Length: 121
Image: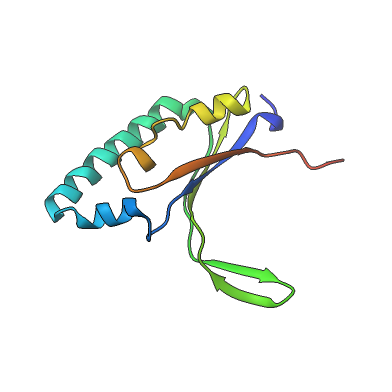
């Protein structure tokens, strides 16, 4: 595979979404049980796709926006990232179908985009 086979997956979610409201409404015991199930499912996903993982990535911290107006704190839906290799954009996206991020945890989606080579680089 080449650099053209590399994809960035961005995990999205909002703490103000209905999924988070539902998550927060769970009892402590139910939330803990779902966390345990979710962590096990996430580990199984990593094992299944280990050969395709370029960078496991991880959670993203607070965001600062820099533009012509200066620097400001902002909130966005990006929560974490992973970098994978796949034969095609479609194949990379399929790796995230039913991912625990949104099938067990209160995440909303995973966006998958190609990492393009730098022109002339």
